[in-house]
Image (cartoon, rainbow, N blue to C red; front, top):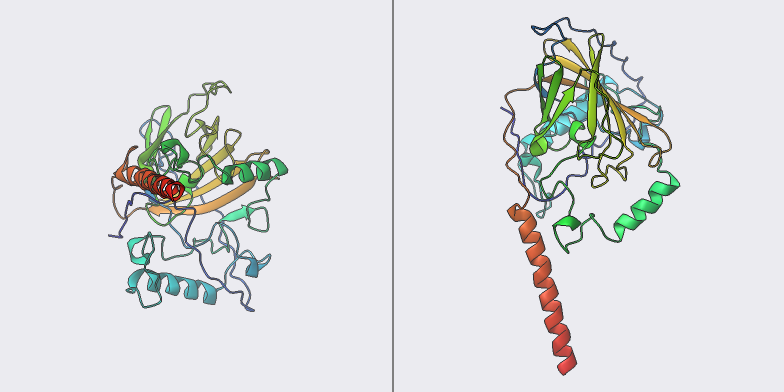
Length: 332
């Protein structure tokens, strides 16, 4: 079974970088559109239930050297997948840094490109990249760098929600990372539950048409409402907490996810992310999930974990040492 690891401490800011080089050969033909799968639950809804694996070495954003090219050719796919296998299977050599938080052989980012063979998971905008930040978002980002929840050590509130084992957050939880790229979908009449292996988050999504929460109510994972569009589950989420952020986005984030069962062992997933206070336009991701090799592993992380305590303890030790040096200098 593929190794999946839950490691405390440290923030994984995205999927591992993948080295790609443009080729003169023509790009591969685009994959055919997903065909809906007809399986139904006992009460008649399309059946999405199972544990689904979405790891892939396809990067979120298109590497610049691909330009406007959307698809990989056969040679590129073979090289990328060969490099990924070597990275995971080979022991570290003399060139491997010794101070890594996650050694390559302790991660599980995948061995395969996404099945549609695109050069990026982002399918819109056409350049395959997250749109530029608005001026307001750039100002907020500059303020975060000077303090707040971006690495300070005054107290637990200064650390991010992942280090505090509160949440991985959205849309991060549904984007491929270094490990734990799995979700479990459970269904009942009028509800869908999605559990993310990373940081053990579970979303309970009502399908009964109830109104959204008041815009004054904000939650870590936002407020989700779902409905069926034919065989596709559509989940709309808003009312996020401003205590989380994805690339600067917070309370004004809006997401629409679409889950379509394409066969016994496949789901096509599309997600559109929008926040007019953060990005100059919405952007859309498409990726493919497959039946997991096994059940979810426990992500044994909780707020107040020893990693967080140790970080704050070291900060206090450094402050104490600095104060003692200053006092000694005054006496001299």
